[in-house]
Image 1 (cartoon, rainbow, N blue to C red):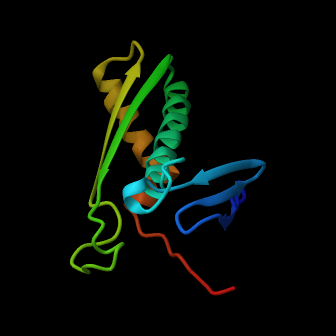
Image 2 (cartoon, rainbow, N blue to C red):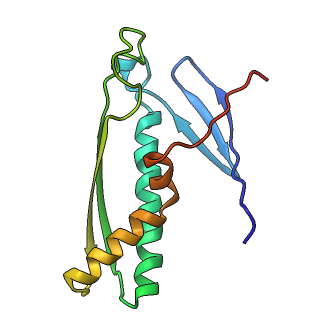
Length: 144
């Protein structure tokens, strides 16, 4: 299969609120009030976790189907820890992004534990968002 290209376009509405167009979908990004926003939408790092959960869900169902068991549902809890000091220009001691992300996946199915371990390994290995989070992706930020 040929490479796929995904694109979005974004426009700032305020210093903390961004309107994003992804295909025919509008996504609002905002910050909580304590970070200068109006708390009217998820913030960028929450959207990273949301994207991760969406990808894990798709991959979980796809791989369960490939492995021959029915995944009736999947509960995913994800939490990440970051230190905002670099974000606010207070320190360069730590990275700006998540220091750690913990994912808990609770499948609703009848598969045995060995099958679920193999399933989980494949889900993590094949999820594009997991790959982007866990590995370096070349990024070019340019002035347009």
